[in-house]
Each structure stands twice: as structure tokens, then as C-alpha cells.
View 1 (cartoon, rainbow, N blue to C red):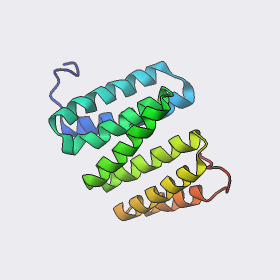
View 2: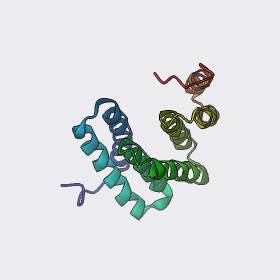
View 3: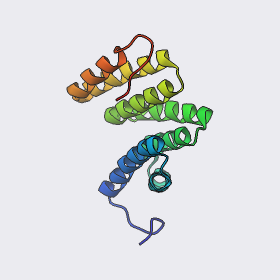
Length: 155
């Protein structure tokens, strides 16, 4: 069945979410239209899911939309979508997805050369990852956020 009629299992939805995030990130690095199509499909899936369960899927949908706007160089829209995704994840107590949204927003702001905002978001992301129990990731982000006083080095 196509995506419009397929009965989705939760693991399919979550897989679609992470595939979309990865595909947008790789598409920006490689300028790959095939990856953008994969990511856009994932965004469509989460838009439909959010229509059925706003509580569970709204923050995921907004994060994918933020990444889509970022990929399409729609800076104002991306900024708003990142902020909305973060607030939504916080309100719904999805600490792991708040951490991811904060981290991806930090990379977005670094790409816009707003290093102070990027550093602040990386630090907030580190705190969220630590609350979730992802201590290694939290430590990595803290090192990344203070690696260079003038810019964030993203490896």
C-alpha cells in the first residue's frame, strides 16, 4: 500500500522520522535530490500522523519541517519551526526529542553564523541528553560547544 492508505505501526512511524532527519542532513551535505525525496516523504508521513495524534507526533513533524526549511534555505521558516519543535517536545515531556531538536537547531544556527545562539543550544541539548541518560552524547556536545571561541566546529 502507498503512504496514503498504509496502516502504520509505531515502529514504521519512528523509523520514518529518523530516516527523514538523516536524509535532510545528508541531502544538505551532498545536494542529493533522491535524499530530499526520502526526507519529504517522511515529513508527509509525520504530518498525517500528527493529524491523528498531535501529542505524540507534532514535535516530530515540526522538527522534520524545520529540517526541510533549512535544506530549502527558508531561514525564517526554519527558525520558527525549530523553536516550535523544541517547545512542543518540552511541553510533551519528550526529553530525548527535545535534546535532538536542540542539537539540530544548534547546527542550523551555526550554519547561519549565529555562534552564540548555536553554543547556547548545544549546551541546552547537552543538559537534555544528560537528563535522558545519554551521558556520552552530553559530554561530546559540551566539548563541541566550547571547542573554539569563535565558531562551532561540527564534525
